[in-house]
Image (cartoon, rainbow, N blue to C red; front, side):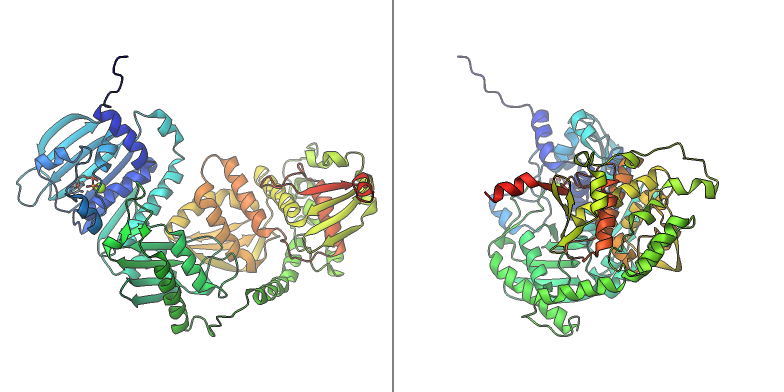
Length: 622
Ligand code: ADP
Ligand code: MG
């Protein structure tokens, strides 16, 4: 047989390598920013267009490259940062694989301009898909500018895989945060489509955090300092009361490199144990300095994962250092290490029910109130303390049927929603039975049990309520008929600029759901009104969760955005396991559920109820 093995041509090898190094525009941003840092830049400018798909440009005032180096920098395994394998154990630079520029040049149009201190003129190189198009002499200041255009121009499959501009921009911003936090002394400018997103002056770590995440962050930070033989830890954690429902800002930097470490993350959580609600996430910005020989950063091509020689010791040191800071700064009034988490929970629920009456008043508010609503109000006043999210009578009022005549809006009388007629299939001929029976029972604060002709139904209360709320929100967006309730005092929420950017995107849809926005600045949003079923006290946590859910998911067209928002809101607002529902609320929930267009699956595709037939029960008794 003839020989069949061939060496891959360089440009093919580079394209394959690019698959590892460059997943999306944000990966290019990371590599270019890190190269600029390695080049000793003190000022770095990042310019992005079209979510990085049209242009990513990084300009630095670092050491620059000679003409030969400029040309060599695009070769694979060409690096000035290590010379021998031993150097790998003493890394002080971000890069070392010499793959980034070669990979990027294989899958994009790249324009490089660079000049060193002692050269008169610089070098300009233009490459498209590993092919050098031109090389010229240029007049340019000391430093390097690399512009990457039309990413994945020659790999349509990868290009199609990219998300919307706004989602890609968010990934880029995340990367920008990581690099700029790791290097507070370096000044950064960041522009998107011609607008300045960040202008970060050279500063210390604390100022850098505040400059990125907003002034309000300052008061939330608690310093952390510890020096041991193994590791020097410094940085900040956020006070427990500012723990968020979303993962929020959690950063580890090991030797000035952002890393992901589930293990160390766990150490931080362990230190916060008992101080924050279960499921809440503390923020942290922690820098760890360790001996470069004691870590291996080579285990992941994008170098965000790291292997420590002695993880267990690090874990213990980190955990106790943070506990110490929390105690020292009087953040935890009494640090009780034997603290029983479970004791905290019921108290929390007590708190929760304390705000419930408020919600009920909200619930009956409807500018187009009609008889039905009055009925529900009097019913609620006569002691329905727990089904805080409105009975079916009142929420039906939010749907169009009641509104057109009063508001003079187009008449929807002829419109019949599926939900008016449809019931879950198994109830097709049993609905009457279900209503008439109206016997419900709450099991373990989690399930509502009710009877049907053929036996019984066990309903997951949380999922059922999610379904009810989800359809309600989706409908108010689709019909642009959300009702809102004016707040007596507008609520001001502070956000980071990237969160504000998300908010700008989702604002219109939220408005149709009943949120009323006042002034929106670069770091603050004023809320003047909320949908009737949102309690004032819940607004902060709801937006917190919304932001978390939207970080990854929003984008795309109006419908998918409405879907994401409705899901996020129904998740925050629905009753949960542990919430006690009285009999009337239970019945209302059951009715509401089976009036839904879809009552079998929750918005998150989980079964809402199961049925147990008499037959099933009989069999058990054999
Ligand atoms: P690595 O960073 O792993 O060495 P790269 O492909 O990212 O590999 O870069 C290759 C080489 O090009 C670097 O080692 C460096 O010498 C040079 N280089 C890249 N970017 C810059 C820059 N902004 N300023 C100066 N030199 C640079
Ligand atoms: Mg590099």
